Image (cartoon, rainbow, N blue to C red; front, side):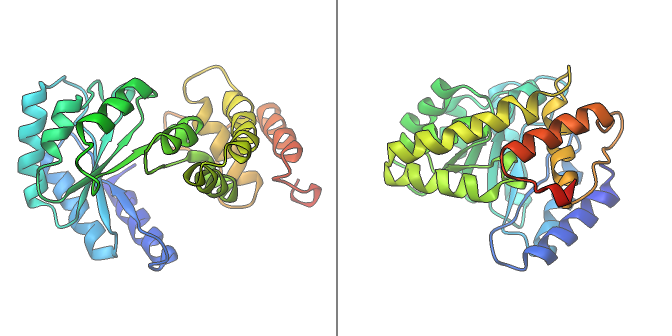
Length: 253
């Protein structure tokens, strides 16, 4: 997204949320100054925290990542969540790096999208004395497992189309209600293995999600280049899956 559009998105989101829930704004950029500017914009708009992954493209050493965070966080006007997304950045914040970063004032949590539960549990171990540090998972398929084993929650893409499902699953996991967790997890996996698996490329998840929210009348399915929306055949498959899941009624079709 262009910087202009990012700023419009921050304004629109904070205005619509109107303080009802915390808003976290991703500020990751290859340019240090742009990250600072986005954080300042987020603060001005009313966001509660910034989300920072490692700058992507060239690989950096763990010591360099820690130095980068120490310098960056000191300039930011908001608390910071780290974002571990090695598939997209070519970096992973190693557990000891996270432990040391958690000692930086205003670093308050981490979202892990590595899909590696061994890594997530390693974070829990090295941060066992930090009850104030929030650990979240990105992949919604792993959210219940993470919460059952002591994690604090997740940032679930599927919540864009079925928010109640993921709230209920989180609550069931927090309560240790395994029967309810198993029941709800089946629906999570049905969405994961249908709506997200249409198409042949890594972008299928994003295209499926955008197509689903457009079918539900939430927003359009236009995507920034180089990505293209699904064609009519794929769109029909998404529609059928949403109907089967009870997320659409025929009048929306």
